[in-house]
Amino acid sequence: MLPYSALLLLFSPLTQASLQIIPGGTWTASDGRHIQAHGAGIIAENGTYYLIGEDKTDGTPFQNVNCYSSTDLVRWEYVGALLSRTSSGDLGPDRIVERPKVIYNDETKKYALWMHIDSRDYGDAKVGVATGDSVCGKYEYHGSFRPLGFQSRDMGLFKDDDGSGYLLTEDRQNGLRIDKLDPTYTKVESNVYTWSEKIESPAMVKVDGRYYMFGSHLTGWDPNDNVTLSHSCSVYSTSASLSSGWSPWREFADDGSNTYASQTTFILPYGDGNYMYLGDRWRSDNLHSSTYIWLPISIRGPTSVSLKNKINWVPNLLEGGTWTEGITETGYEGEAGQAGGAARTVSCSDCSGGRAMGYVGGPDNGSVTISGITTEKAGVTTVRIRYANGDSSTRYANVRVNDQAPVKLAFLPSRGGTSSSTLVTHLETADNVIVFEGIDGGWGPDIDKLFVPVE
Ligand SMILES: *[C@@H]1O[C@H](CO)[C@@H](O)[C@H](O)[C@H]1NC(C)=O
Ligand SMILES: *[C@@H]1O[C@H](CO)[C@@H](O)[C@H](O)[C@H]1NC(C)=O
Ligand SMILES: *[C@@H]1O[C@H](CO)[C@@H](O)[C@H](O)[C@H]1NC(C)=O
Image (cartoon, rainbow, N blue to C red; front, top):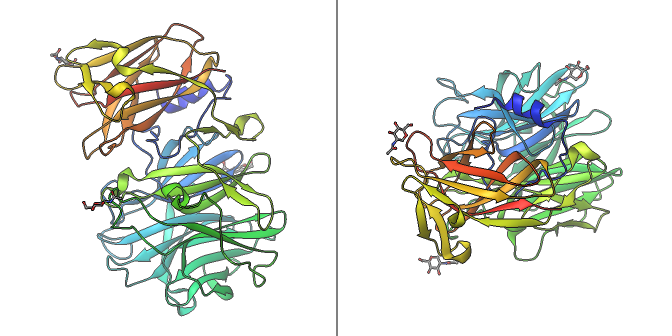
């Protein structure tokens, strides 16, 4: 398989105007796995974006704080862990470490990593602090505490234009707080503001001199929801000052959508005055398969914040950084492809035409070859793969496009329906061939349909 860095080199001179974000899909990183950066934040440096979040590979207890990098917000390279499980203590076995966030301190020249530190029964309710010399390198853990003596659960960080740092912290007894950090960003100095409302998952952004605080109503992981989506309606409050004048909380997504079944984790300013909402669609029974709802958010004044759902969209980071809607697509049915090995058409109620190509991979090396794919968006592009995976664990496939080296793609459980996985590849204008094969005798997904951009 071609190393990811080689792929980036190969692709970088070509047009990138169709690289898509597909909210809620499987996002395969350079290591061939669904991105493990839940409850994440992003920090940008020298044109590179670093995604830092929770590794939930083995469920709830702390494993790693992971770091991925990207220059286009679509292709993510796994870089490593900032912190990993230790034999005992705050980061030991069976501990809770959530919502890691990093800001850079211009004075100390260090990166400050803050995170929610807790026991399995959420009784500790503390924040932990670590510092590092490089954004995606190893961090030194300095311990945990209750900020100013108050409980702290969900949290975020905010760095103001004047270099002041702030902790956004949910104190379940007293409400959501903004606390000022000391000049080294390793201690909490004083309380700046407290909302009495119970709001969790805080994230702050400053737009045209005005602060916007985002969060969601306290609902946790709703056990009543049969697909165990997080059922949390997100809201925002805004003010020209951090310490006073905050508006009432308002909704910003479509009514009844529960923020498109996601919970806020971060708001990223990028490109030419664009903002991206980052939310988690939690799967409480299978946390590693929680997906990412990233959408362009429009912030145009105190009462004009809005978020619309999209199947796909294009951040256009390398081409001026003004997002655009997903490009017109054409579809290719999986079952219309050529079956190899024991692969064959299967019925699938949620699939287009009620059918898909099944038995891809497995002991008989099933495969499907989809030929004659054309696009007017030749070059590096996103192909959306709609699939079914009825297992409770992730399936994998090798995907070969034309004569390129195979790329390993992940396919999360699709829970009785279909789901999407994202392939970034290089296409010619005509006669493209895409082949799906299993890996080492494992089963790949049932291939419902490929969606290929046309102009
Ligand atoms: C960004 O660029 C500056 C100046 O060239 C350099 O000192 C710094 O290490 C770079 N940061 C990263 C994360 O590459
Ligand atoms: C969830 O499951 C329960 C019990 O099986 C059922 O009564 C209820 O209608 C389901 N709710 C939804 C929204 O599907
Ligand atoms: C499947 O592929 C493996 C690895 O190439 C090979 O050892 C095996 O014989 C193949 N099985 C069949 C049924 O072709």
